[in-house]
Picture 1 (cartoon, rainbow over the protein chains, first blue to last red):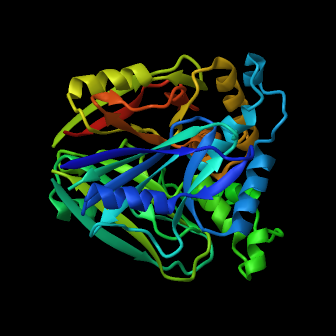
Picture 2: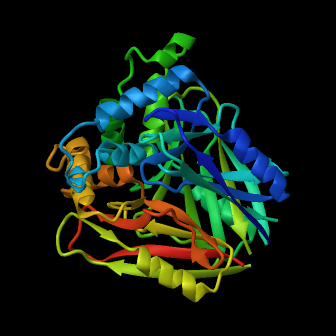
Length: 137
Length: 137
Length: 137
């Protein structure tokens, strides 16, 4: 059995952003030399998401609009009594999920035709980390 | 370490459908001869879900009503400027999640009494694929 | 390859509750003696969640308020024609997700500074089970 653990560091220029990180993950999978296995991609901050969807900027915009609708910024969240203003980000990240597990088959990410891994930031402009852990043989 | 990778092909007769795929997954787990490990079940299309819930048609109907309420069909999604009409499906699939990882213990799916794996289709009437990857020993 | 399978039993005194179970998971990971690998933490009942978020009671209260808003108790869910009154719980658990997979690196849970694993109960006052399965080397 082989494992490899690497971290991606992401600091978005804006508070909210969706970014395709598939190529970064594929590079780590290549370095791991795992032929059959799985790779976990997981946001290590609780105001960010990792999810799989289409690489399409119109869709990214729809997703940001939608999570804002279902978990709006600026509400009187109790969490914000701690001095934070990011109560919405904690909820948004749960709507989209914070991790994915991708199959590795014949040394490649085994993804469908439109599947791309995305990082969703809901409280950006600070350095965040994503763990990428490969396990297999 | 052993791995097995198989694919399920699903083409639903209607646009929206929820379908129990537990038996298909269990069959693949049996064929894999893995005694202790995990099986990943993941929708390879970005308008479909895989989730665990009760095998109960009333609940399936509640789920379809609920995702329609939170991510309605027919809105002016920016994604649809590409010519698609399935903006809602991309969001619905994220509400329910697109993959599950099931423990395999003593050569069997280690599920709770009511846990069943379901496929959720939100843009059907075309052939879709689900990857089922077993890893263990 | 090593695997370990243990179960947590949780019976909450109230119908709805969020509880930090990180220490329980860490103890099981320690016992497993896995140095590099992953641990799956998954609710075995379909009216409960397992998710990662901040250990902050104000946030827990926000989360409970939020899932009640998006999937209210007491609606005329079709599932309840079976005699149940927990239709909301089945939906709430899907909003937050029912499982997480945590990386184990150098014999420890490899979590970000604020990441904590939580159990979310939406139909409590009965004994529930969570499977904790470690796989690695």
